Image 1 (cartoon, one colour):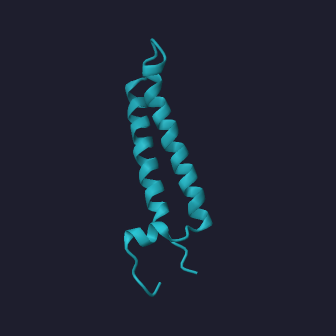
Image 2: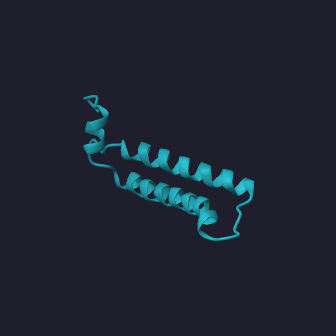
Length: 77
């Protein structure tokens, strides 16, 4: 790429097809983690084990970060 782009230009630029799929998968992982975390407040008597709570938290964080990084990739063609 001949010109360096700032973040707003990257977000407005075209995203390659592979990274569009990465964004969708990452948001799905994040949504699954959020659903696991919210299940205990929705269903009475349901308690998520501590290991799964930590896993769900990491799923949310990893999904958000992966989708943000994938969104900033641009197709320079």
